[in-house]
Length: 168
Image (cartoon, rainbow, N blue to C red; front, top):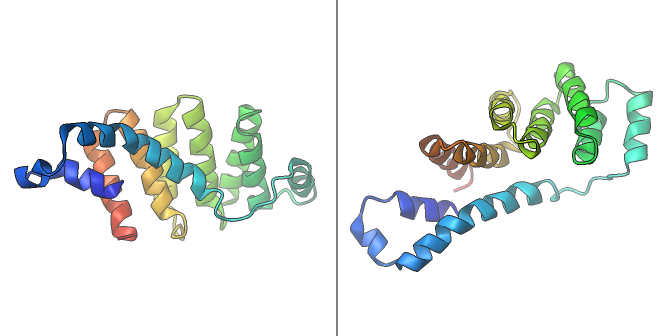
């Protein structure tokens, strides 16, 4: 995907000469799909227990368990967005190890609700959060998608360049 963006950004006619018009058009349509798949599969690379009742019980017993708060928020995101947003807010307020992940989870909820500017703000916070090195690549990719949807293509390409620099 990142290589396709590099090809499309190339000023060289020679670089574009080898690619057919149809393949370039296809690449332009597939890039958002590929980024969406990257963003969604990133969350499934680690085995997480998604038993809602278990996480809800953990939150009741340990209200300052930041991981439980943001995991429960992710589980409830599609079914109960207001509850999920509140859980993310609580996790962010704790300002601990999972703060960047809570910002990312809240951004996902904003994206689903069409609140792209709020999602962009949360993804920016996640990128800037100290200690967010494990999910930084995916966060840049997610923010690039939001920027693309906001028609801020130059900024989206900069984020993809930052993501590529993290994972050459």
